[in-house]
Image (tube, rainbow, N blue to C red; front, side, top):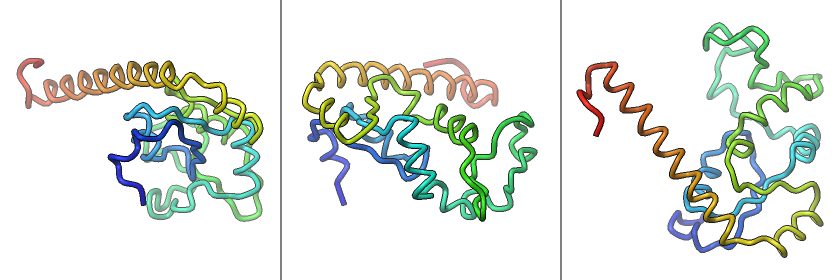
Amino acid sequence: HIKYEEFSSFLAVFFLPWHLHPVTFMHFYAVAVPLLVPSSRLMFTLEANLHFFRQDEQLHYPGWHGNTQFLDLEEHLPSPLWDRPARYLDTNQFLFWWDVSPMRQRPGVLFFESCADMLSQLASMDNRKISLEMQEAYAKYVQHNREVLLEGLQILGLQTSPE
């Protein structure tokens, strides 16, 4: 168990997500620790062989079974669940959700194709430059969310003017 206060002491983090929206990723990102994450191709290969994605699906998405009507989503949107028994992982389904994951959306994240590539990037990375890029991007992310929240509060009549 690592204390949150210790996160910022790391020079970098090799991040192997157990699913596509891990909260710990944003914790590391918030403290601007350079993150090395598997590339799309490597992540797909790992998932197709290890099947670790959304093993908690019945807890978080009971009764989903690919039914998009609960979320009012477009019909062509792939299910966020791998409907596993006797089914291979669908490349388009995985890549859709991988591309909208925080790991793919945040500036400053480094992607590696292999262990050798990861070690090479670790040896040559400019930690300070990457950390500054992440700090700037995270500040914009927080500001955007603050503005959206305030707008929502105004619409609901719970906030009369922006602070």
